[in-house]
Image 1 (tube, helix red, strand yellow):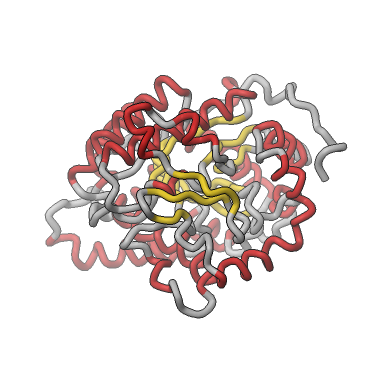
Image 2: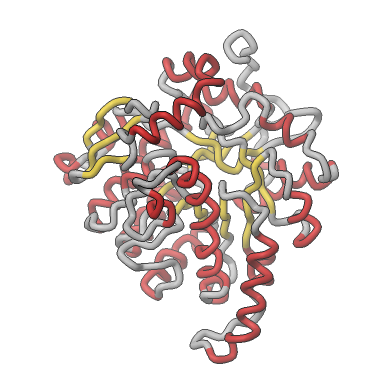
Length: 398
């Protein structure tokens, strides 16, 4: 807790290690496992996957320079955490520092691995399965506070549906994460994806769209800037919000949420300031063209969003107050983005609680209630909240 507020982080992150695919790759695909190349000069783990470097820019001089500039202020802060391999115990200690009671735990690099369009569906699913098993074991150190979110890919939606079912039913994952860009031209409102959306709806967990700055997809917005000036800044600025916008359009205006009215959807780590304008735009265009479309909606795109969707806000997002004014505070969740160097650790939750223009009742909902609703959890089921079993290690963390 922080200042009396219960806090749930909608997408805390891991830093995947070299042991992931060595130890968890399914036997049938073990000889096609990603090759771990260690830490790149850009201060990221990197892999070779089917002949491609992941992240694609891991050895790029322009990224190395920009990343070193970003990392310099927190180098000493993260050095001991990096030395410990970003293990689960260090994540729990960081949560104690921030006052985070429960965290939904997401990938950092594992989705980059399956962002290669040409991967066969079975192989892409095997990569996802390896990560999902690894993450389940990572979170097992304290399953009450660390809740894993599984990854799948759209290379083969039927296999993705099978992996989603296995991850939730057998491995305890509480959400299914999908990259927001197309795969081989297949997008979220393609009919063949329905089998995946149906399975996620049946499982009662949310579908979660979360971008990456290291995607290898041919149809990926930020790769337009490759080999041009100031790539890293433009890459990181564009990748997360810009890919979420058409994904939200596909799910609402594309008719997916009409067909799956019980499916909860999160659009995470891409800011939220753009949301009111985008919903307004989608509503406006639907009013103009919707009467002639093949799939008729029962409501406006903004209505589907408000009924079934949630969006993530950063702790320091000044435009949050505008979003609340325009659409309310029921559909917004929070991420501190630990342990990424562009995040505000160890001052993330404090920054949010001090954010001007947002009242404390809205902050309370965003910190806890809304995240419970997105993930279909209940305070009653989280019995540890009032008596945390992990102590605060002030001697280890700042």
